[in-house]
Image 1 (cartoon, rainbow, N blue to C red):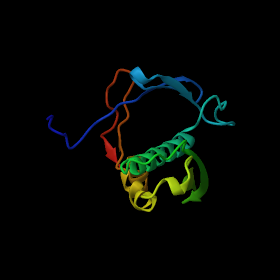
Image 2 (image 1 turned 180 degrees about the vertical axis):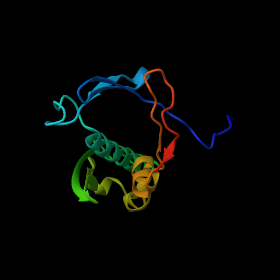
Image 3 (image 1 turned 135 degrees about the vertical axis):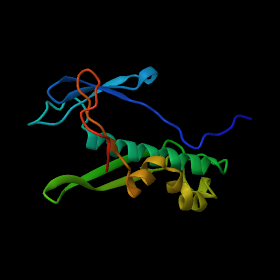
Length: 155
């Protein structure tokens, strides 16, 4: 059996196209554009706040399905809707709330272990638990030749 690593890394590449529009490259998994809404950008793709909201909702939906399927039950066609609320904090816009609604596709009666699954599924969600606890972020600015312009700063 392969030895499990304690830490796993992943990488996503972004490159500026124009204005505030970025090409987001997931390597073998494809690419898409992100962009800020007007007046900064042209709204030609989801902005980072919407990407974060989608990531939280997607992870919660997948975690719910996993928790239900652990009991050999079928959740059906699960759907999710997430609503984000922006608020001012110390004079800056921040995401103050992400409200996620998950809808099961199967009848509750068809899932006798649903209560147990509901009690644990959020703990399986890597993204939601990371966002809730805060994420240590290291920021480093590089020039066009790849040279560091500043020491890494954690926040």
